[in-house]
Amino acid sequence: MKRLPRFGLYILVVISVMISFLPIVWLILTSLKTTAGIYAWPPQYLPQPFTLANYTKIVTESPELLLYVLNSFIVGVGCTALTLSIGGLAGYALSRLRMPRATVLMVFILAVSMFPPVSLLPSLFQNFLNLGLLNTYLGLIIAHTGLFLPFTVWMLASYFATLPPEIEEAARMDGMGLMRIFLSIVIPLSWPGFVATGLIVFIFSWNEFPLALVLMTQNAMRTAPVGISLYPGEYAFPWETISTATVIAIVPILVITAIFQKQIVGGLTAGAGK
Amino acid sequence: MTEVKLERIGKSYGAVKAVQEFDLTIEDGEFLVLLGPSGCGKSTTLRMIAGLESITTGDLMISGQRMNDVDPKDRGVAMVFQNYALYPHKTVFDNMAMALKLQKVPVAEIRERVGRTAEMLGLTEYLDRKPAALSGGQRQRVAIGRAIVRTPKVFLFDEPLSNLDAKLRVKMRMELQELHDSLGVTSIYVTHDQIEAMTLADRIVIMNGGVVAQVGTPREVYDSPADEFVAGFIGSPSMNFIDLRRDASGLWVSVDGGLSFPSLPFASGDRNEIRLGIRPEHVEVAPLSDAEPKSGDFTATVRLAELLGADALLSLDIGGCRLTARVGGTGHPRTGDVLRVALPAALLHAFDTGNGRALERAST
Image (tube, rainbow over all chains, first blue to last red; front, side, top):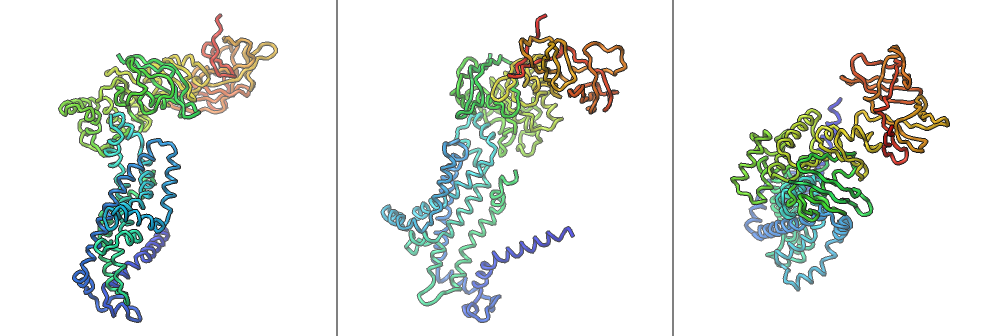
């Protein structure tokens, strides 16, 4: 009888995994079907015939997809690096430096992040135009950094708050300055927090649509989600191309997530068990 | 010569006074213990000396130099923290060598000094390990080693033993004592454990609510506590307190009944109420059958007898007045026994019921 509740738990896990994975599985299955298979009625569940033609076609006929993925990667890495640098320093200052009104500042930072990104677009576009930042990696990196910084500051500040302050005090007694403490003590100790936050920011940046659409207008500068969404022609939706391109575009994220999986789980639950 | 001088030193957070201004001089080579319950300001005082907490009022002098605005690393002090505060991502060697590295001491000298300290503390074989691979006692030894390596003028200890289990605590306490004897460095030690304070200290500073209640040798604070707080805090089990009132005939009777004293050896002035104190170990008990009762003896019933091993604690009821007595553990009285109890006048304490200050003994 004791095993029964666990059994129920497993069923729940399986159901929730199925629900969250179904769209991805369907996407992958679609990418392996022929055009006829996709529009077949009743719908095909398993590809018949099974084909890799879509993949070969997209690699040979639309080499710009790889460019989109590369653009996304550059922007994602740049945005993650910039966000973690600024957010780490800001989060540390807010959680440790006994700043007056630190709480008010934190709430303010959160409030700023509540504006829908679309509402920023007109002024952002105009300013980026004036500054010559349209269609540059730096431009979109800056825009994404601004967008995800509040989240990063909050994540990292709450991570720093879980570190025992005595270690930093011991470092002060040993003769370290503030910056040195941050670099050689705080960062190594909060590594899981940095990895988890960085990965989430990277995924956010990878998937971000409205800013990437508006600020990167040249085809060669488009990021993966924008580029793929612009595949549809005037009269047809090339589902097989879209699904294949999307599968290719999520592979880098899956690989990175798999690599850092341990740190993410550790980082997201850190402090909960104390 | 390292003399630490606190001159009218105090700390406030806004309107809240965490430490009330006080003066204290810690002699060269002295082992001073700051003792008190949590929140009494003892840690804050230590952190002000360390430089981790700013000083609101007064001056901190170390070897005659004003240190208020000097960076922690330049004060010549080293601190051992309660939770060890080792760098978890660095080896034992790097933990101990950090301060020297930052002082740009030559590598060969660092190796030599860390090696020597590690040997003294029995850590040589652990130098390449990370703190996570050490036991609690070893970690605390590394933390102490990290402080020793710097050859500081003053050691600061912030409850260094309270994370250890009871057995290890006793062992480390002895090691600390030996260490202090051999190094002779001025040490300031914060604890809430009165046994640590009594055994380690040359002098104890007892703090309560941000105020220094008494400064004295362990003997002094035990024998002549300055006030009711100190009397109750030092000693385990703590001192019995009995409220007395002077009746119309001038007899001191206990408010709860049972006890009465024709006279007491205290300068009670014109007070009509005092609080009497006697330590459980000073309450004398004897079977009723023994010899002739002396005047001033009381009859008590044992309400509860607890055997601790070498000793037993008796909860006595003297006509409604409750007292704890500490007696030898062999053949101790049982619950329900009726005993004769004496409270030796020389071992009594008396306190003002208003401000808790100890009353002077009457000069006779």
